[in-house]
Image 1 (tube, one colour):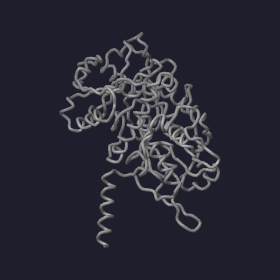
Image 2 (tube, rainbow, N blue to C red):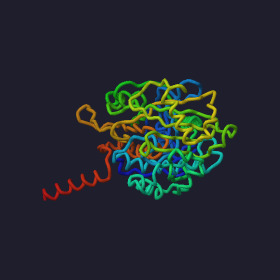
Image 3 (cartoon, one colour):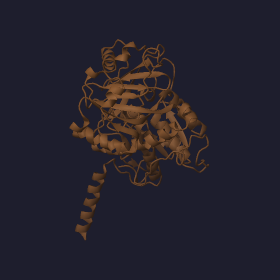
Image 4 (spheres, rainbow, N blue to C red):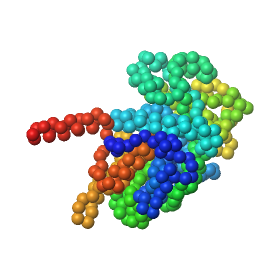
Amino acid sequence: MAATNAQPLVFWKDLSPSPVCLEPATPYSPRALIVGGGVIGLITAWALLDKGYHVTIVASEWASYGKEQRLTSQIAGALWEYPPAVCGQHTDAISLQHSRKWCMVSYHIWDAIAAKPDLAREAGVSVRPADFFFPFHVEEDATQLAKMKEIAASGVRGFRHTPSIVQERDVNPEYGAVDAYEMLAPVIDTDRAMTWLMDLVQRKGARLVTRTIHGDLLHQEQALRAEYAADVIINATGIAGTELAGDASCYPIRGGLIRVINDGSDFPVIDAALSISADVANEIVFLVPRNDKILIIGGITEPHESALDYTLDTPIIKRMRARAEAFLPQLKNARVDPDYPIAQGLRPFRKQNVRVERELRPVAGESILKHSRIIHTYGHGGAGWSLAFGCAADVLAMVEEALQDKAPSPLATDADRARKHAQVGELFSARL
């Protein structure tokens, strides 16, 4: 379960884009070691820094901007989505309940950043129409209807549901889309945002260390805490959870994006995100305009594939582009970005759910059994940018619990907790 005292992060109240921390650290402030330098690690660091923690981030590599392979956080489509997302595979009750909360915390923070023009440009964040299309009327599918109603009531801006969106966006009538709904959603230029986040946490005082840590963190917790003078360790390593958390349920889902020029010279500028989810069609359509006059074409999910060897001629990439062109015929004239035509990466999934949870396994002390001070936040799949701020709020609360050496609780749904409390109450009554 999430930490019992977790409160949503609120921009300007709990997080500030200023280089000065909201609560400056003192020599006596707690110290956190974060393992992982992607979006989850950086946003978690931001939350801790503004709460007055000393923060060190250890990562094997950091965001880069050449023609070499980039971080998974940079490869992401980075369109904010309500779960289950277009490319998401988390459908269990635990993930869905927590992700719905986490994504709305993130929505409001990204929206607040986008509302301030200078900050929005610096951070690479914009808010755009996001349209979701269906080969049937949404009212005909109970699952999709329930999700649409949840979205409409969630607090997103600009929600509307009308089949006319199909014609408004020039979708090919022969493709089969007959219904759609729209909302205003944050879109993040991941390269720019990662630069901004790295700079921000460093200006707030974070120390960045380039290092690869191997092996289960639990088995080296005391040594790492001693080496970095850390009171707690946060594992934000993504796919490396297999090794660092001893979690055999982690697995990659390979994905790729084609980057095409979206400056109006080859086709009318596309300024809305357009998508068809895998749960309503056989294959995904995923089109997202970026801030740098680039449109990304996505829609690949290949579980348990880890070779990053896509080219523009790879059959699955060619099918993805053909699918996008069939959906939106004007893309037949699109030119690929000559400097960076294709982005590819491995979405970090795990079998059960996104894991935002304290380490449940005990550690042996000198004479007693102690609770670990490791907090895990990994397995976000393709939704890291959508969930990061919400997850950081829970991590912050778990850190505070760990510092008090409270017993950890497993991630669970509200229904699971209610059943457990009822069972405890029944047991107590029986003893009376």
